[in-house]
Length: 328
Image 1 (cartoon, rainbow, N blue to C red):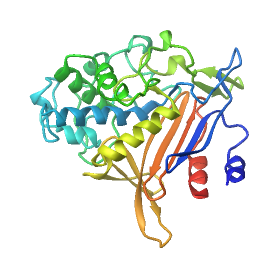
Image 2: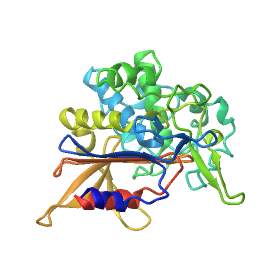
Image 3: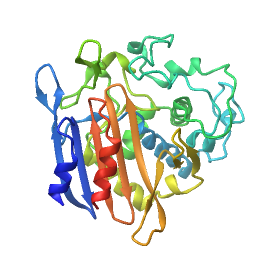
Image 4: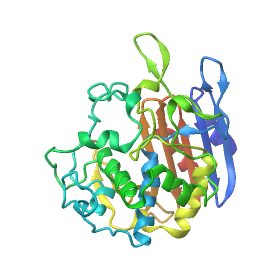
């Protein structure tokens, strides 16, 4: 089995990969450089940005507030914030069915997606920096439309109800209790030790370029927090034991451009798999993609299998993820 895993990993892969089955570590290895110019290598405990993967953390934060009785899935936005869109519910924001238009054009290349935004990325460090650019826009369909803006609003809800920044709330209610000591939302110009820089490949010049100016200066509620593969496994173990409803309740069906149908729960995607008898079942996963980051982490209940892949070079990791899951 180990030889199959080794052969499945492309020689050009750069990042970190971890496979855990029934709480036993099967494979864990880092590849490539965390800092290309100084040839500082990626390590298995390097902190990587995971783009939209951190939406799962924010969804947990909202469910925590629901457990505390501070809101419900049916609470309307107008009861908490005065930014318009008064009748949108918390559940609609969680499942990307609110109709709030996004603040970035996700159809653009990931390396230029911020070019049309009126505020320079270096100045974007809080959800409140983006909120003004969400207001006054016409709502889209209430069908599934992936929306970073919706999760910015969820972060603002957390901040309004707790009186502290959303990432401070997540740290006190999630990261610290689970001993996820290497998970946080860092400012890119104040990174702590052992963090990986993100890179994208400039086809014109034939070289890798630091993605520093292709994302906000600090991760917001829609993504770009940092974490490690070990911390993600701790998160999965906690969610599976205590909060399965995050991806089992009110999952929304979504068909992609290839006609493949996936489901989206509360901050998690749900793919389909088949057991040995051909019966279909759901496999939840977190994923994120932006300039300098490719990320996927899945947990197969039937097999007790957690596969996490993070690349800080925007590598195409989705085929690799499928191949590794098929080995088991």
